Image (tube, rainbow, N blue to C red; front, side, top):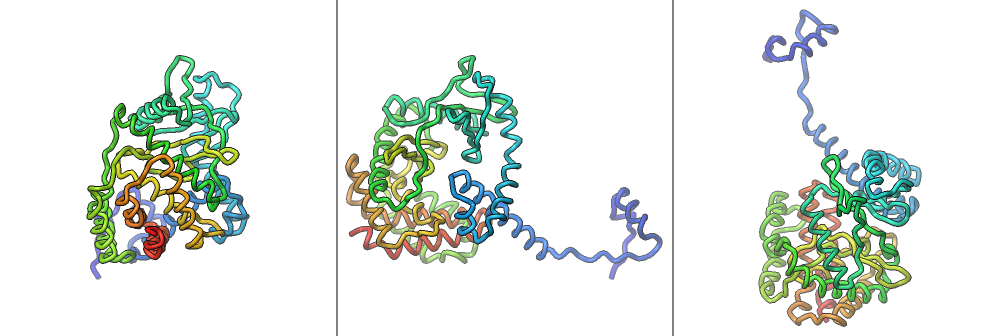
Length: 387
């Protein structure tokens, strides 16, 4: 074993501290167990992700009992997690309280409804942005959609007529609160049909937005062949094997040029499509809107139903019936081509492969495996969906 002089390797302050406990002899310092440290770090990251997910579900209206059943925790543990997460967002709440007078609001009753959004006095919603360009683009989208009689939130101007407020490197947009909430009975086929109609109505209005606002022109096929493949390969194809990936991508590539492209929402789920008394009451959150294949929105919504963490999961037949209702609702407004219909299972599978790759990049192996299970489920439904 090689001995070195502590004066040559330790900072003066640290050496002085050590000398308070030990001087004039040889001191053995064991190597750090990097594997153990990495294990502890990974576990901590997983816990943080789980806690954030629990808090988001809490904001969406899940009870402590429901969350306890989903995550196999006691209600007391759920309460502690939610309380801890609330503290993390307290600072932003205090900032919002400081700037509300810029809109002429003095009486402040704030309720957090999403990690980046707060309800104000049961009448308004204030959303926090880090990206100024994204905020301005979303404002423009809302204005165009309102002109098309699409149900979106109207921006509330400040007392000086500004559309948003810049404060401490963040941007704050206030809008009128839309009536309604996200659906809790996700198996309701009538609601599924209305969701199909809602997606088609939005697509119709989006055709106008495309002409007036600059959007990110994205390609699911390029994503599949780019960062998605890279992440899966870096993971040595441990969750989804290379043969499964290749077969799915080749199937998508064979039809991709025939699939209509347009501006889409890109994040279609019941949290972003609001309903009141059984009818659509509004659309929210256009942060991910982009130009891509049209059927992506339908497929994303339907795969999202399978990813819902509920005690009452879909059976194969229930999900097929819901898929049928959504597509029928969409086609009551916009006709899908035969190539689009035949491509729906493949696009769904690509979306789940996308999530496998995304969760791998986040070192979230649990959710990567969950996405792979949905991928395999959709594979088992291919012929039923096409029929």
